[in-house]
Length: 451
Image (cartoon, rainbow, N blue to C red):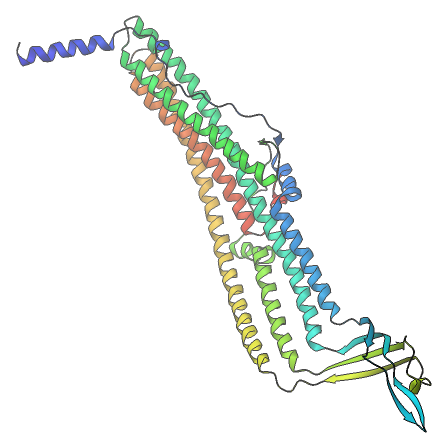
């Protein structure tokens, strides 16, 4: 048998295999089951924001920091308020002392000595304490700003997880609809093959496409579960929530760049925090200078002798009090100069950090605005691609049913349309997230932009 005849024989055998009738049900396409969406409590984005504000552990930690700052402010005020102390003193001597006066022994010191005292001290002039109170007030404001910034960061994280879950659910719907269409064409190809008007190759193409789409569907289910699990942790819920869409975001503002930057400078919490950090550093530096200022304090003390006095002191009153003023003038303390050097450097660092924060904020506003406009343009193009690919798929399916194109054309058209639909879902997610990022960069309260 020559080479040409052998090639013909191989071709005939191959064609016979292609046309061999084999049912679709005869082969198990995949043994991996598609996971079902776990039931859970329906949750809207405003509800998620409210739960995060009430339950999230990071929010609770920031509230504890505010309480700690209030405590530090009370401590600072305590340095300017009177202090009152009570004491009870008891002394036991090894023996009583006495002396002889005019031939008579008189006790001069009793063996037991018990007295009580109450003392009060009031700082009248304490410049360092005054500055310390002012610094503590700034620190309290700083704690509140930090807590608000933490809240906004948390809300953005919650919104991101929420929209990712919504996107995953949309992706699941796309894959499920594609699977139904592929199943229909796979059955049609199998029917044509079993009746001798189609090839086995058409069946295997649809089977391969079915398995690949099913694999993508399973991945989408796991992506949804991951997003729901993230929300569950952020919101401190007992069960997995099930995000429901329906809310819209505030309209994107059409303002000039100067107006946009001015609004961000007014509302951004990181800029307010940088400003407060500089003010606190300046107050601490001033407080170190106040170490050179004299302090003036008043004191008062009352004593009462509880034990019987010695015979020589029997005429002295048991109760007595005294008051006085204390002026303290600092003359030299070398550690003060080290403190000044540290706080001077800290103030300069805080000033540089404020300028850096401002520059970064302006950059973030410009970038997030560009990112949003880019996302809008890309979404429009994605919508156009999805419309065109949908028309191409319909034409390919019609032509295949009429026998004018092969199954490969249908598979290619469906893959293109499926990819475009998934890309459309992702572009919608990107648009929502970039808009949220812009509002966050503007310093807006994210709870107020959800309608």
